[in-house]
Image (cartoon, rainbow, N blue to C red; front, side):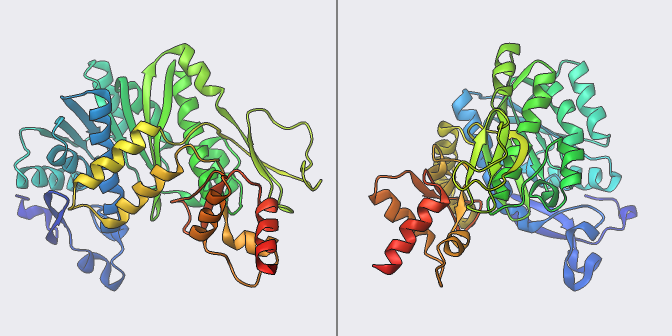
Length: 400
C-alpha cells in the first residue's frame, strides 16, 4: 500500500475487471469534482473511452494473431488503462506503466499490487520520451504503445514510433479538441501543421487532421502508419494505427493526405488529394474554404471495426454507451466521408423542424443511397448526396 508520507486522500473504486485506488475528488476539488485538481489524474467519465480501448487491444491481438503482447503506457497516472489491459486481455503478458509525477508512480505501483498484477506490470518514474527512447535503444520494443496525455499527443508521437515493433499498434488520445475542431486555428497549425475547419462536420475534420499528422510523423522515420480505428468519446479523440517498417508503404500512406473543400453557402464538401485550382464551389459558385492537410483515406479498418464490436458484445460489464459507439462505427465503415447534420439541412431547406436523422437514413437507404448515422454527432448522418440534394429531398417531402 501507499506509505503514509504521501498524505493522499484516497478512495477505492472499480472499473472494468480491476479495483483502483484514486484521489478523492470531493476532497481535492469540492463540489465540482474536477479531475485536473487532484494530485494524480483520474477521470471517471473516460471509462467509456477505456472500455472501447480494451476492445481495440483484444481485437488487435485476434487480428494479428498475437499471444504475448507487451504494452507501454508512458503517461499512466493511476495506471487504470494499462492495468485494465493486463487484467482483461489474455494476450497481454506485460505492461510498462510510467509517470514522471512521483505520486502517480507510487499510486500506480499500489494499484498493480492491489490487483495482484505486480509480476506482470512494471512501473517507472521517468519522463515519457526518455523512457520510450531507453526501451528503443535496448531494442526492447513494444507491441502496443498507448499515449494518453492531457492535451495534445504531438510531442510524444515520434518517441512512441521508435519504441514500437513492426506491425505494432500505436493508440493515442487528443483532448485539445478546441484547436482540432476549429475554435483555435492558430493552435492547430502550431501543433499539427494543419488548418482546421469550423463547420457542422468539424469533429471529423479534427479526427482526420490528427490521423494525417500521425501518418506524416511516421513517414519521416520510414514507417507506414495505417489508421484502423478512430472514435470520439466525451471530451477526447482516440486514434489507433498499425505501424509497419516500409518506406514504400510510408510513401503510399502520404498519398492519402490531402485537403477538405467546403462551401459555407450551399454546404458542398469534398475530400481532395490535390489542392483545387479554383476557389469556387462547383455547385453554386460561392467561395470555398480549404482545410488541412488531413487524412482523406478510411478512418476505420473494416475487420477492426467488426472485431471491436464483437469483443464489446462479449463483455457485458462494459458500458452501454461504449457499445452504442462501437455499433455506430460498424455502420459508418465504408460510408461516404464528411457527415452532415439535420440542423444544417433544415436551415438549408427552410424547414421549421429538424428531420429525424434515423428516419432520414431509412429514407435514403430505401432509395438505394449509401447512408448511415455517425457516432461523431447525434444529429449527423453520412450519405453520398450533397446537402443541397438532401435539402431538395426534404423540401419535396414536406410539401407532399
